[in-house]
Image (cartoon, rainbow, N blue to C red; front, side, top):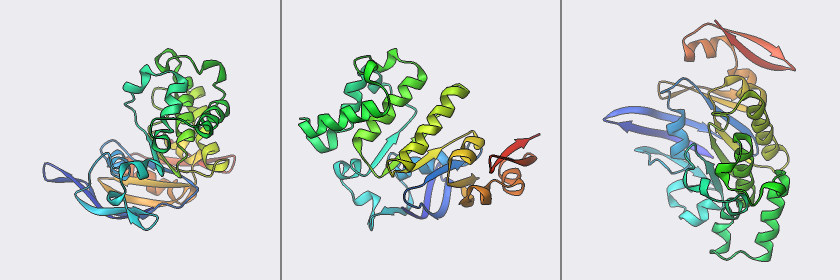
Length: 250
């Protein structure tokens, strides 16, 4: 996925200002940065939920705006923080929803097999007839990931997937993110506030500051005292845990 000169303005002021970077396939890429840095707006433009003012997003040799909705839904899945409508579905209904771009509303035997495999993969067999709003936060996240698996897209976009989860469920969520990449070959793009989750589970990090890309690179290239202290405007120190550069600040 290639992003060139991507720009978004609100009230004449750029919140994303002519950014350029390329997202490699089959990797986990995290967007980090303080509130207002532009990371969620970029995620919205990449998913076509927000219309850019200038610039392009392209993949498979075609600009994002040129894909029709059905074809785009076969290539790109997004989980946002606002899933209120889907909360009234059962787990199986939610996962079935992921097959809509392929099934024209009528699930085939192949669709049913894919749906069941996704439910089993996320260990949700005993919960598949429960409504989403009856589940715990961690179970809900697993159900939404099962829907993404059933949708079978190359790109998976996750906006704050650890939000409102305790450390146990947030860690499990990030382990699932790695499985999407390592076992299923997905390209996963996340917006994260917790930078140590980004450091421990990502391959690449895109650090935003004031609507621009401050640094895009591998975890070790971005997770440095200089980069983090600059974008967050506080003093950071870096320590290695299991070969990963994790941050502390004061």
